[in-house]
Length: 413
Image 1: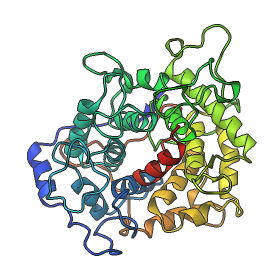
Image 2 (image 1 turned 120 degrees about the horizontal axis):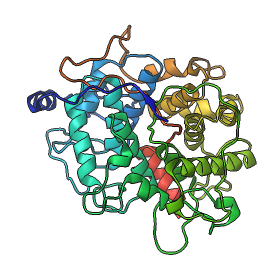
Image 3 (image 1 turned 120 degrees about the vertical axis):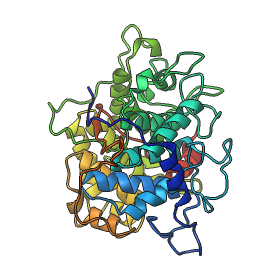
Image 4 (image 1 turned 180 degrees about the vertical axis):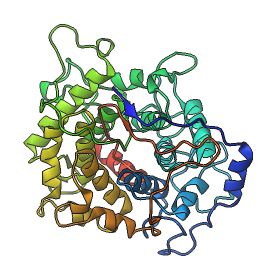
């Protein structure tokens, strides 16, 4: 099922971590001026850690070694307890563990730092934070103690997988429930309308759960035990994803995580086919729904990780088309560029020839110049090494603190 590089033992002393924190890069100074090591020039207030993490993951996935200053910036954003805020302007100021730290930011940072290597102490602290923040239903909310939602839980699953842990074995202490218990409880089953079966709701709540595309692309990846970056699986037998089986049993207790992922992918494939091979988003005030490039990229990753290369190729072809508007959407935006790079790479495409665009070159240009040559990744003291994993699915996610917050506001139902 999973094919991932082995992850070295997490064993760097706390003293090294303290040293890294003490030498963290300076805070964001003047508006419009990029802090040393940070990708992008827009205000990082809402998505600094998220976009930095995606950029590092995308570079690593295509064999580009990020600049040390970029890795230092991300590691320097970590709070003392191991969590991450969306962005810390003053890294010398203590974080607010209840409101200022986010599951999504922490999970993305853990995946990136595990991938680039050399930050095992930071990764170990981050994993500890995730374990302490797990809810009794097995999932995670956006903030510690918040109601579990599909996006945050999926991001946390990706972080666990990236650091060599089996998400199925990370259970809440009191209940024994795992992230998969929480996710399967959010999937619309056979009691839902036929067109929504297999989709995921954002969170449980009053009234009937509603299909949410952002939650579905995230959960489709997570229920395979994967994160944002994985080695391309190549061609498969060309079979379409299997819809939710509704003959006889259809409850969450009767589905495996892989079954749940297949049903989610079937829902996404059908939805994209009906929309001209992409997902749409309804922005408040807009006359009509617009293409959601980020969610479509996530869906491509999910399909590729689920070993449905033919189904992934069609929306990828649409994204690469000159009339889609994807490259214009991603221009100068490291988080958006990284999403397109990861999607193309996962589906077996070439992000250096994405239509007429070289996405890798564009991404590199948004931050510090990468290292010329990719060297072995080892911090000399139990580093995590580069992590590539396949679990047969994809996603999340697709929603940065920037993408995520705006997406959730418009799609929470």
